[in-house]
Amino acid sequence: MTDSLLSVLRERPRLAELAAFPFNFDLARADHGEEVVLVSGASLEPIAGDDTGGTYFLCDGTAVLYASSEGEAGLLGESVTDALEILIGLPGWWDVLHPDADAREAVQLPYAPELDTMRAELRAGLGLPERSPEELLARLHGTLLRTEPGYVLLNAEEGLAYELLDDLPRPTLREQVLAAGLPDVPELGELPDEGDEFGWVAVAARAGLTAEARIRLIRLLDDTGPDAVRLRRIVEGLEAVGDPGHAARAQRLFLSLQDTALARGAASRILARLERLAGDHAAARRALDRAVTALDAPPLPPSVPPVPGQEELDLGLPEPVGDTSAQGWRRRGTGRMVAEEFLRLALAEAEAGRARQAREALDEARALLDGMTGPNGDLGDLSRRAAWAVQALNRTTV
Image (cartoon, one colour):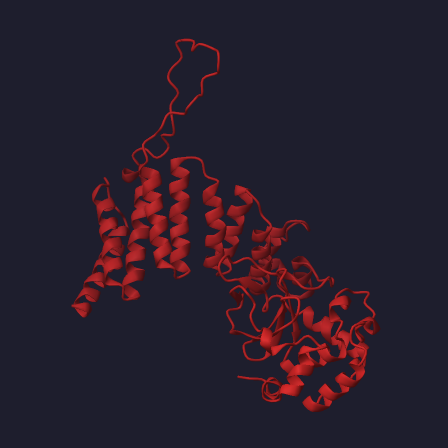
């Protein structure tokens, strides 16, 4: 769907020229420079840009989102018409993105002495009414405050969220939950302390504010360093709100912090599950292969570098023992869990119609199951289901 005013600009060069200068909505600059997506999964079309490297996007065929070249983004209008009214009426809108802004500061531009004449011509050509600066500023601020949760912009490759474009105050997630006025809040469980971010994320999700909880978790992830405990909670939270893709991003960071073979293997297996749930079966297989490699690695004794200029002393102490955490993993519960994930991947690959990958995953699972001792419990049923799915797919591809 194309907004009617956007069509007018594309068909009338003089109006497009005015929109580009001095109002900085240039149809010829509709190239953002990096691939981006909306967190909601809605369609995103670059339609114009400005002289700072920023880009205007049409979201789901209606709303207009602006993304700067500095990694900030915000919703400007519910339509191209709304956005153009603001850009034309407040061409200096960048200077009024704070709560104490004076709309009059954004009406004129020092480098465009004929701006009022050009504004009148563009408004007339597009059929836009004249509105007061105060009304336009109120609309701009109100629209910006609706950027979250549905219009958050993500870097498509890394999944990092763009920062908010403005400095307007917003309620915390806790305040949003309490403001919802839910009559059955006690049924959500004991309310967390005010500063317990993860607790309020969980409450928000149970209260139906799933999108808000998800955005908060993504922003927490973007701001988290090498903190394994915090990353584990983020992984759990993102999976709980139905976002295995970002949960996998957090799990990859968590995996990088593990320092034993067993911990690396377990973290890789969990990563494989999240990648599978996110639909990236190739990444899931790589994670499973990484789990097996980590668990199979021979235990290496810790190296103690000699002190220069000192002879080694034989104190009769036992030799240091290296990492043996994963020894015998194929016969333990770890082997069973890795085999289960291979079986689930085989089923997923079969459902996707990828016969070779499904057979390979099934073969890996069977090799692990054959080396186990004792009953495999419900893995027997899962193994049969995977085998039937692979066989059925083989028959259809012969």
